[in-house]
Amino acid sequence: MKHIRHFAVLACLGLFLVGCASPAEVKNMTVDQSTFVASVPDTPFKNGLTIKQVNGGEETNPLWTSEVSNSGFGEALKQSVQQSGLMAPTPLEARYDVYATLASMDQPLFGLDFQVTSRVNYRVIERETLKTWFDEGVVSSYTATFSDAALAIQRLRFANEGSIRENITEFIKRLMSVDKPMN
Image (cartoon, rainbow, N blue to C red; front, side, top):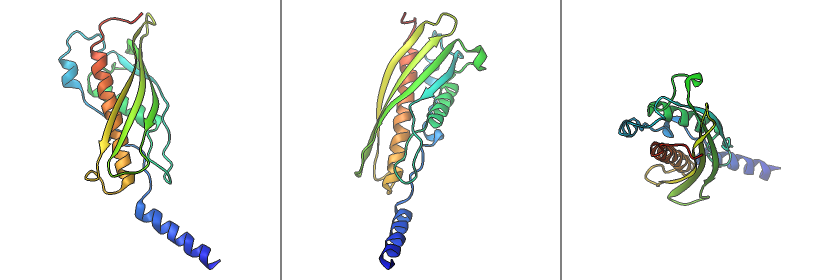
């Protein structure tokens, strides 16, 4: 019985020293592409999008690893679209609906540098015609190094956040090159 108590105390102390996993933070996944969007004068998407659906994320288990939740990813995507000048004033005024599915997050189990690769499938559909203007998977990576955070659990969170931030940036860049529907 005495050994079990010692083991429990050591396990709790180990968790305290290592830290608990925390979910990706919205502010660290959000991008402002307004300068880039302003350089594309003829885009039909300015002030025309709304985020209709986001799925594929996972909630973080504090005893395991940092993850990106649907709500966190959705809010980061929404704020990024807003700050970039692409969000409609209200959802009812939107011409286009954005659907995003976080297909995967490839995370390392250990290491000094943590590279996370995110795969997100984005679809942009015009409401009035139901035509698809954008339907692509975006893959992006971000590496958090030991100099970013000494604790591995924090490096993983930083790598998750950076990968999603890079993914949203790439989505907006690709969307700005679209000038007609796919179908």
